[in-house]
Image 1 (tube, rainbow, N blue to C red):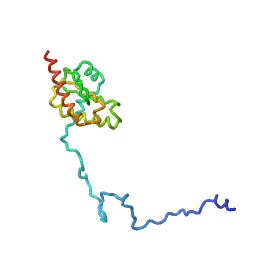
Image 2: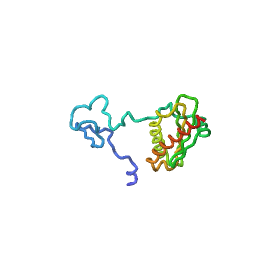
Image 3: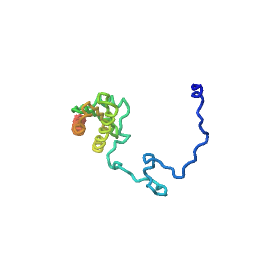
Image 4: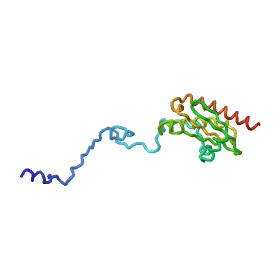
Length: 175
């Protein structure tokens, strides 16, 4: 007879208990932007910006990014090549009015997070050099595995390779 009682459903009332007048939420669930112990609602409108980067940081414009594989191939095959410990830079002149820059960051660099970090670093460094680059220059920057471990060397290597490649392109166009 004991097993018959255990198979039966327990008696649970269908009514919900009445809500309490002063409901309490733990502080972890409370709205952090709301003032404590105040009967007023939170402020309306946009909130003050917090920890945003300044707007004047250089950004590589979308129209300066090389996206077509034919442009990559042409620049790598027919352009000048400058090697450094953290990167290889290929540059070529094209009868165009804009500067195109492409990046090659392979899986040999590291995980996706590391590759994206290197790519962002390169884009930032290249954006600083873009205004001084002659129009019609196409550049492909290929990152090497050492670029992930030494960001300071990446900056100096890109500066040296960029200057050297543009100098070699100028010599080539004179000849």
